[in-house]
Length: 416
Image (cartoon, rainbow, N blue to C red; front, side):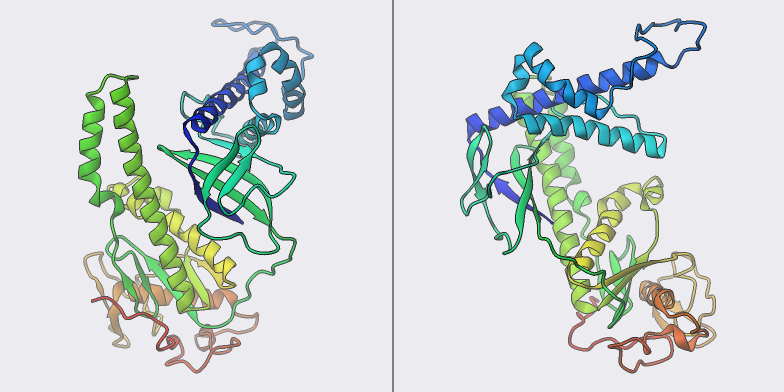
């Protein structure tokens, strides 16, 4: 697991960390330049050279792989003494980071690694420690010393600190501490009360138990202030002191929006785990929806990040998480299963076959729950009556064959 803490380095330590990041950025760009030169030298046909530029690299030269570039670091330190200022393992992790991105490019076929511009390298990874570097008041880093830390939650007993990543966000510094415990944790098994979650723009989420949460609109609420700060930034002379001060103000506001959104997502994820034992959500690619006319609102809500956080919180708390097919969840009656077509302007589900009436988003959450129960049902159970969770361990008698009874007293009241 990763615990992130706020750290407070002094001016000297900040300058050294920033200088290390720039040195690592140079090493990253140098390694990427070797890879690009080797690739470009192999693009031309065998009987001719490139018309625009020619790369004189022997044909028997091997690809500059990870091991080769790591072995060249000691030689590079003699040629460039500045590299010796950075701890050797931190410099090695920079080369490994480059080759992880190269392997990712090779696996998916697009997304060639790019050169890092000034200020784009914002983290340093310390992969190994002889002893625990974290105390109640400080964190000890090689060649840096003790840095004050806000240990807002202690490291659990039995966990060992494996590595520490120093992050720089706007003008604030963080330490992401990776802790590990040698125990085997089985995957959560489906049991208990199921909850289907439907997320959208009008209501951030609607559960199958009738809980409705309004979207907080993190970015939209601060958009006017951000627009003002960015207008002032555009009028400053680039690379001046006033430009840097204004740039930090813009970065602080973006950081505030990001922190507020993530805090809201974690609180809602824990609230879902308090409500039920099984959480089901739609299997959607929200990147496609973010390219439409409502892209700003989709990105403001952060649905993809919310689903990832819910999955992580469910695993951490021993709750079962599942993703179901999202096609037709809002056009189907959760009580009788018949198709009830309605436009987006219709916000109430009213079935003409069985007379079941409820909120449109709540009905979609109930359909998601029913599909999740079908997904985890055992082989041989067929028909509509076996689609509910009554046969699962820990489930009591339900209201009907489709609608599972909510746990009274443990579900929050729906907002009006």
